Length: 151
Image 1 (cartoon, rainbow, N blue to C red):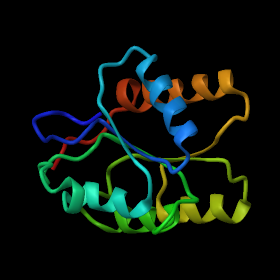
Image 2 (image 1 turned 90 degrees about the vertical axis):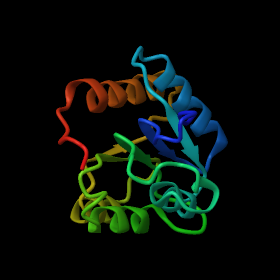
Image 3 (image 1 turned 45 degrees about the horizontal axis):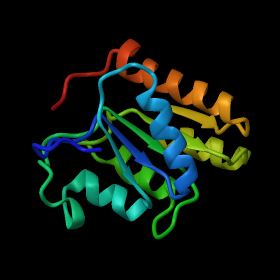
């Protein structure tokens, strides 16, 4: 969960399915990297978290997550709209966003990359494979990838 001092979590998980969220958080916890995960259940909460408003008003607005894992089919505001808004803003454009979804729709894959997604991953149906994939995503983006310094 998020840092007690109000800084952003390392990973923002935007997932409306409680089982997938629990499995994802467990996989990230088990991959051996020291990190904080904040889970929000819909697109509206994701944008509020990033802007540090609403439920997240106590979070320091200057700190941003190092990685966003984004489901596409969300309540209130869909994942593509969240992606569109985050990649359109200078402040959030460089945050790596990985779409982690069950959708194999070619149109959604194409649109996600057109909007600037960094990676598009289809959730494996097999639980063990799902855990492996999520752990690999976490290790890559938080340990291997060289991200630009925060602004």
